[in-house]
Length: 102
Image 1 (cartoon, rainbow, N blue to C red):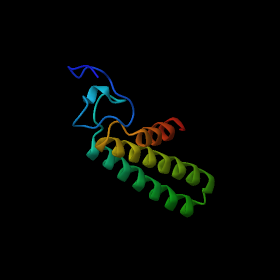
Image 2 (cartoon, rainbow, N blue to C red):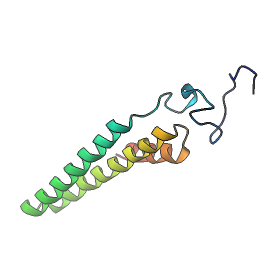
Image 3 (cartoon, rainbow, N blue to C red):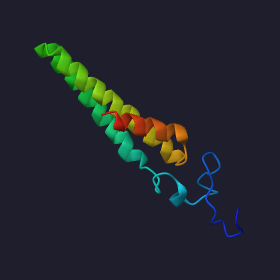
Image 4 (cartoon, rainbow, N blue to C red):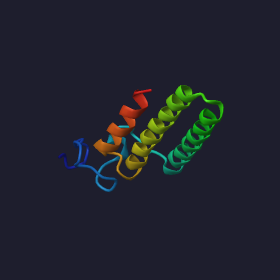
């Protein structure tokens, strides 16, 4: 590593104390509160769609929308993991695979 700290490190070698946040995959720290709110909103939406699907006998639509809500919740969970460790490969793979699957 260069003496001025300008050399970029790889996965698993950085944390918030040792590396500049601009070296992370997003170049910023994902917002914990915003992602928690999105998880809550998608969770509420999923419950509402399950109820409506049961009430109006729209099983296929309710199932598809509920699965979509669950996938979004997993994706935002990955971003919550990346809030504490912006270099987390697991958090990145969770959020990118879930967001891109829709």
